[in-house]
Every structure is written in structure tokens, then in C-alpha cells.
Image (cartoon, rainbow, N blue to C red; front, top):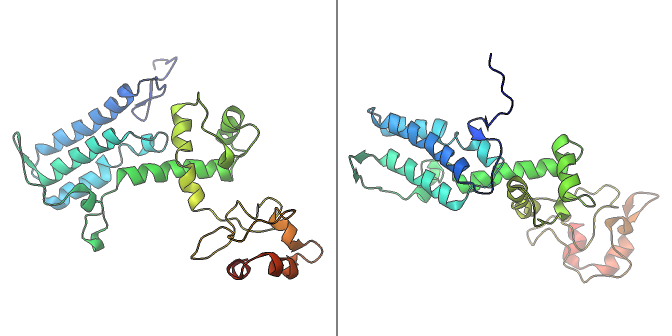
Length: 247
């Protein structure tokens, strides 16, 4: 068995990402092109092409998209290659694409084919990594990221910085998306800011809309610590009817 001092690839992708990302993305496109070129020699029905694209081609960049944010140009190339394979091609002549790829990525009950929108899928996978940093700050990944990029704050309050790695900038880019779906679950309320954090439920939004009140900052200021119940007199005096119903 040959001893390897340093692995150059993991799951078919380079371990070390240089400043130029061309090598990494060219490797990804080469894997996809080889698969598609091999399949073009076979006679496949549309249903067979659909299964191969969903089960194989869309699975190839999954690991990469869970770590890095793919440039739009790379996603467009992958989508164009899948579209050409699905609709077919006779020599250099491309057959008519009866639906654009955006429509093909919609669910079947809406008239599409249910293919993954790679941009949305990329953000979802990166959002999962961001959520892990929020939920598991004591994990090995969480500790490393915190020491290097946000030592004195949480991930949700971290800034991008100017010398972060490509992986960090990719995960940070979906922080706003994660925050859009977050809602605080109130316990003692000491960590939740009344005016800045999302903690109320309603169609009008997740934030308090009443005018800011001095000396009332955290949700714990609205809770009676002896009974752990709301202080209704304070809430009735300072908050609007909409906020009173949501709290």
C-alpha cells in the first residue's frame, strides 16, 4: 500500500483551495461532462434521462455546494449541460428546448419536472452549515470558526472580515437567509432584545413595531421573575394592540 503524505483530493475535489477557483470548478465540470458524454451514446427515454440527471448529475456537486458557494456562471453551465442532455442533440445541432430550465425546476404538480434549482439548493446546504454554527458552537467546527472569525460574539453577529477563507465567506453569505427564518423561543428572556430580535408571531412580521421605550431592553424586563408570568401592566402601557396580542 502506497503511503500518501498529503491528500490532494477528497470526494473528487481539491482539498486546498487556491486564490483562483478555476481548478476546483474545472474539476467539477469535467466530472459532469464525462458522465453526460458517456450517456449520449445510449438510447434513453425522457424518463430515463430525468432519473439519471436527478440521481447522478445533481448529486455530483452536492459536497462542494455544502462547503462553498458556487459562482453563478458555474451553475448556469451545469444547468445548460443538463438541459441539452434532457432535450437531446443531433451532432452539433441542438434540439428545441420546449421549456426553460427555470420552469423545469418547478414541482411537477405546478407543471415542471422537479429538478433542483442549484442556486436554491446551494443556499440550503450552506444554510445547514450556518445553522450548525448557531446550534452547536461547541463542536470542533464551531470552535475553530469562532476563534478565527468571531471570538467575542456569536455567529449571527459576526462580520465577514477582509481575510476570510472561501468557505467562511460562503457560509457567512447565507446568514441573512438563516435569520429570516429564525424566531426566539422565550424562556427567561434574558438573551432576547425586545426591539431588535424576532420573537413575536404574526402575519405582520416577527418584530415588535411599538415605539422604543427607555430602560426596557430585554424580554426579561417584561417578565415577573417570582412567578415567571408576563407583567401585563407594563405591556399594556408601552405596547400597541398588535404587539400585546402577539406577546
